[in-house]
Image (cartoon, rainbow, N blue to C red):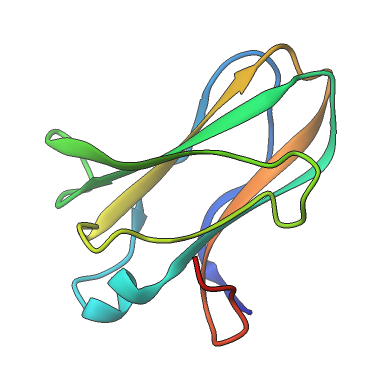
Length: 122
């Protein structure tokens, strides 16, 4: 798996009882952005019972006209917790929204765009 710091969407973001939304990340206009995988990892998560991940996209960084193009429940016991192909409908900009169920008393999550042949087919 190839991770690029420039394609990091969330980096060690603390999660408690409120939803966390990343800043806008520019993926570009190329078709390769549509052939990527969203990878979500967690460190030291305790307390909560679930996290729902949404991938939001827009053609502008202002997100004045955006759409949710995917929503997935993560597996809190897996590493990575989520690994899914980014839908072909993705536009130039993306955001990730992580919504917890229950109250996490500790832990962080990260979300990255990844490329590479080692990624599992999903």
